[in-house]
Image (tube, rainbow, N blue to C red; front, side, top):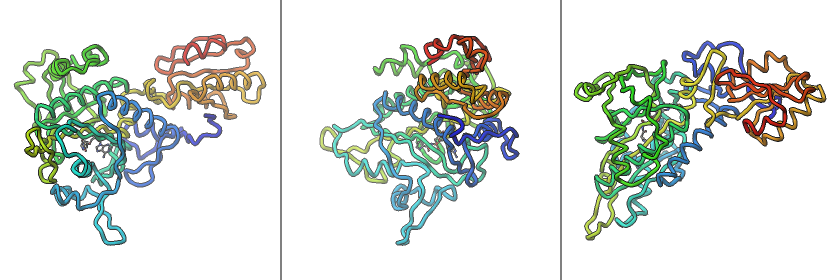
Length: 434
Ligand code: P5A
């Protein structure tokens, strides 16, 4: 992408409406623009990050056998009346009436809809277990939308749903999903602590929140320092046998606790190395048994012909919230420092003298070499502006092309995360960081 032809409106000044650093940086780096309270348009640079996060989430869902699908955003109220949640959900639900005076709503979540789809098509125990997911926009008319995309009204969620014949089966699905979450967050470059949670309006009796530690997090948490050292990419998570899952789960749910009524002193007493911090909830998973399947009449023929009511779980990740949460965890005074896995571009090529035939040629060659993975700053701006914008936008590498270096056949490479600089022959750049 050529920056001169990109809608990436960077701002020098700090926008007054933004209270936390990720919101400020998202506006300043030109990732999003607010279109109404809690509703954001994703500009090209922000959209690339959102897509990168969604891709990693998708790959890890697929890896544990969840099937991707896509359900609509608009739902008939009727579905929610059958589960009893239509009235219970309250003013957070955006209610809509169509031209035939039918009650509709913009979905805040999809438990009812997936249960209905499953009920229409699955008839036998032989078809279970199954896990399904989609990555789709949700709407919740939050009382206080704030912190930019962190607490929006319209937001992108990955929501998965599991169907099992019985409780032990549902626990296996739950653990598989938990494992997928740990891998997902690790690949996104953040430590997410699984924390036992109240299940709230989604219901059920087994639930974990996934919390990213960040100074500006909404809730206060206490955790075992062991979580900071855990690595979920190793052999413990690369196997899928039930025994492996069992061991992994036992290891992962070493005692932890949080403030408020969730605090469990008995568990907390066993923690050897206690830490205190603040956290952002980036995921939430629930086992809720037959809370939806029973009232909605979902049952399948069991092995002996007797109907069985499937046990369900649902599993959410805040995909758009993660963009903000990742910035909270990865920034410095100059701007965003993207983890490599989600950065909008791997490198920014900074042409310090646009119009100089040699600089232009070196940049064009490098740009072609990176085949879409580099952003080319070809704007006729001062070098200082280019450096500042590249730091603000946070691409992992900057390739600085100036007339003197170009004449000598070299460019300067800067690593955004460390500020470390090195001079390299032009031909070696792509092999080094491409
Ligand atoms: C689980 C999947 C659910 O809705 N139903 C389907 C269950 N859970 S949840 O905890 O309510 O939401 C899941 C995740 O979505 C993100 N999230 C939000 N992100 C931005 N703005 C919001 N207003 C918002 N509300 C929820 C969170 O990351 C949450 O963990």
